[in-house]
Length: 232
Image (cartoon, rainbow, N blue to C red; front, side, top):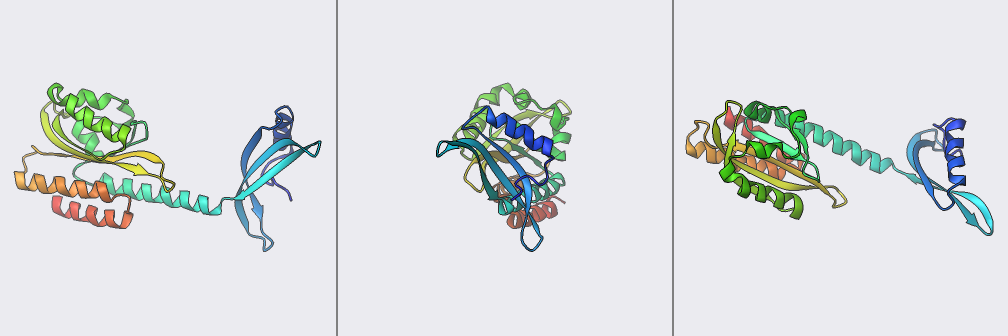
């Protein structure tokens, strides 16, 4: 079996030469194999140089990663749909990775605070929070990141115009299929944007529903359509 059909002889020889000097170590690479019917499928190859029955041999473990690639593709598509839908919403939506660093902010977030995603450092958002509210707001957010707990907080933030506006923010942990913590999805709604208080509270409740259902694309889409209709 040719374990490296997509590699040149030179590329594979370089891996072999490296392993010869590192007995017991392994190298992992990805390629494609061919079934008897001619169809191709992705594989992950674990190649190791080791000793077997007093002989030094190369041991290859080949894993069919078709289902893994399919799951990864579906996850990327789901996240793309999520982000595309979030761009048109009238409230701020954001995601953070497992360390708390920014991954995504929608256009409403950028317009509200006068920033771009690439302008946001790990703690830039704290500069936007009113000094009197920073401690409680930050504590609630860090608890979500460090303890993987739901996040909810209100506070005053400085918007692009320089005004202080009161917002309510929601967030929840995101998990991979294997149960690994992937970060946070959350959002914020302006409670002092001139809307009547009842409408503001209703929008906040709707945002909370969106955040908490976003791991289920079909359900999230339904909430998002309702949010857009209500905001319009």
